[in-house]
Length: 374
Image 1 (cartoon, rainbow, N blue to C red):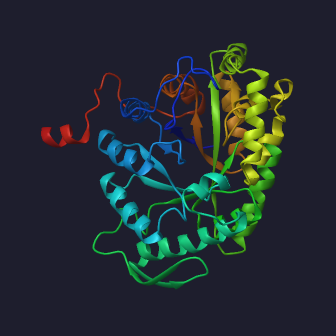
Image 2: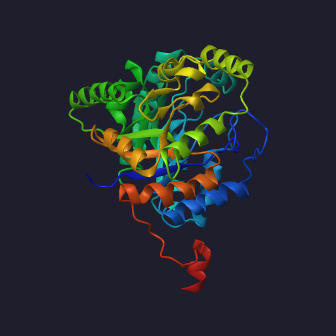
Image 3: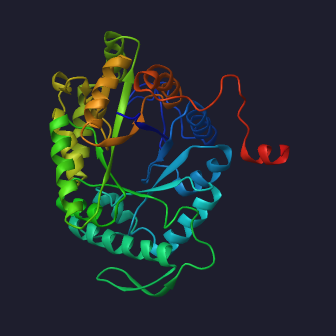
């Protein structure tokens, strides 16, 4: 099998060595985000995910600031339909794709927390939000592909919409990545996405989901690529990795876990989130939900709550099981993200056959310094 493409994560709502504890917590300061992005770029990660939400630094602003400080790193930037217009999003996408010299990827996030979305003025129910997303992407794609569109939908309208003078570097537009476990989400992915993302679940559940996405895509005459979002806890040996996993949640009390599970379950209508919560049921004694797939992160954190735990060879074996299903890109993370980026690159990359792109001893130069030197 060819090497997997490995992306990293920028913790834009904060970071630290323990989950659910202020001990050692690191705020999402720009300097820290810069350090992680530059490290990921040097180490050979293919890209970095910038998440979205009301507790995160704005990804568009941060991505624009980080792009000139990196050379190869792609920016997988979350875009939320319904929070801004598709025409504005098309102009922003074209601009950031130009600023980054063609290193922008859009992660379409319909959103699964009605309370948070209501704070942004979006009051639609679950399936209506996906219907709006479908209309949003129809307009967005039309503007970037054709530079103009007329569209009259149930939720969105564009009357003689035009992109203007500047389009994106990537043609016809920056790639669209999309995740959604519901039937409505899979339908939107099949209509518009270039790559479908799933959170890590036991392999049989992932295989079932990918089969449904393939079938929906094929029915539209389209072929889908696939990616996996997962945390990684990699150490020299399997026992060392399990010690690190236990340490990550060692500051969590049963009371904190119960409160977090009630909050996570009560605030979401996301099918994917409910699937993550069901893996462990909030219990510490059932966290290994599949060999080396550990659901401890999901005791406290929303989104993907699973991590692959083990030695480099063990984790590489598990990742190849997903790769055999069609997964080609891994979007990984680890706490804290700066140190774990190095650990994953130094331990896991060789086991996966991923080569470093930065020559030993070569100093990184930001884009403006390279241009000045030239």
